[in-house]
Image (cartoon, rainbow, N blue to C red; front, top):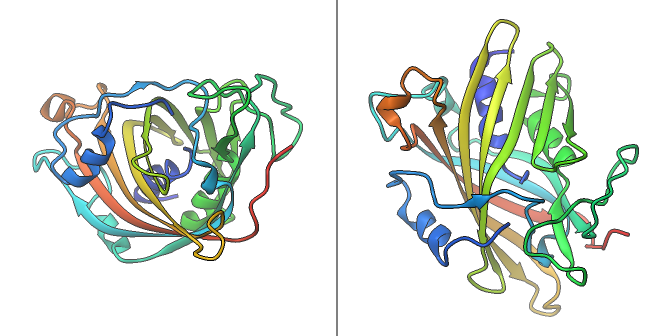
Amino acid sequence: MKFRRLIIICLFFVLFLSGNSAIAGQLTQRVLEFPNWESKPILKEAEGDLIYPEWMAGEWQVTSTLVKMVAPNPEVVTPGFKQNRQYLDQPITFNVRFYQAKPYSFINVNLPFPQTLNIQNNSTQNQENIVGDRAFNGLNIAQAILGEKAVLSVKVDPKNPNKQITFFNNDNQLLSTVTRRGSETPSLNQFVSTEIFQQIFQGETSIYLNEVETTTAYTAKFNQQDPEKVDEVTANQITAIYLSPQDPDYFKAQNQPVSLYRYQLKLLPINSKSSTE
């Protein structure tokens, strides 16, 4: 498996794996300031899972298109950046799903989707907590990019939804861990989330580490005849790549992103939304 294609996986993989409340308006403003990102956002430590608005519940067909690439620091460029230009304006389609998870700590690891997850963010016993199906979403995204045969499975840590491993057919592995998270709800039909991941790709002869931030601003379009129905969701997503302290160029970049990617997303509902028992 070519290394540059695995870098693409690192970029897309954080898409729907994706809280705690951030400073009011910080994330919305951050999207508007792209590509002038000088440092990481101020976020709380990730606990539990990322909670989405109720209108995200259900299964969606996603079309993701890379529309802009920026290398803020000309002295430091991540592997595969130049090659990634071939993906500009090339849509990728895959399915994702979100469901209601009850705020209890038990997870039956022997059951497929849906599972009961430990929700520790801004949730209560009476609140519907909509979360992403991380294993399902991660597998679909990876296979859409690399092909079904190239990606064997995606496993989520049953004790921590912020940790997961992707297994490839050549014994390579990608370990992703959400370390920090934030979210905002500017209006009833808008939702902005940010997650920062530590990623470790273990190849046959080498290990590559980096840190990835994904900030996504979702907007729901409600049906005019049925206000509870969502016709589509559009999103503006920005992925930033940061070097790990182990990288020899770390002190050149420090907390400044070395690569920025901007995507346009379109989500269309596949079936009617339903709660998970």
